[in-house]
Length: 173
Image 1 (cartoon, rainbow, N blue to C red):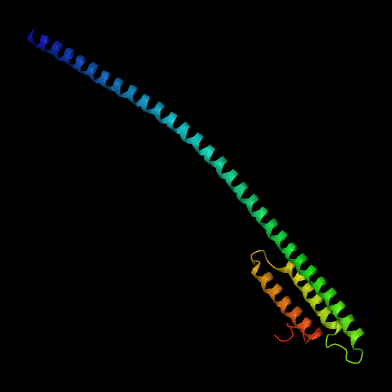
Image 2 (cartoon, rainbow, N blue to C red):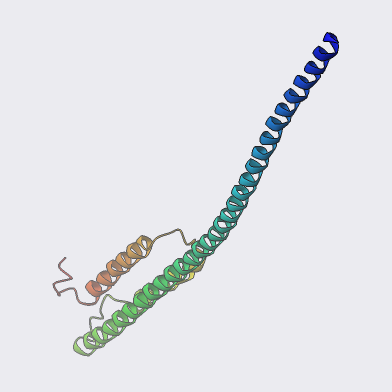
């Protein structure tokens, strides 16, 4: 009978022990389920933020492309304005040279001026060459090129003016 009671006690203790282990496992399972739910919520939030960032990135790229296009249009507009300016200055110079030439011809028919029609045409051809080369130039070139060309054209115009009127202050320079 002692053995019977001992066995029953052992069985009872084992049963209680297994119940405690089961309770521990149940608590661990509940905790793991809570952790899983928490991680799923965090994953949903991260996915949502990722989608928002992806959308913002796409908008930023579109804005950047739009800015590049606007910059391209501005550069093109500046080049057109510079070309128009060069054309207008060349036209003004041509008009002035034509007036000066007609004055010299009326004053002194025996001594024609050193200026030849070809010189004015050279200026016009040079301007047209600049305008034509504009379409071939890449957008990366700055307006420094045009400033240099305008400077060169101004030197040519000064030279033409000197030829036209060698006694002027410009002629003595």
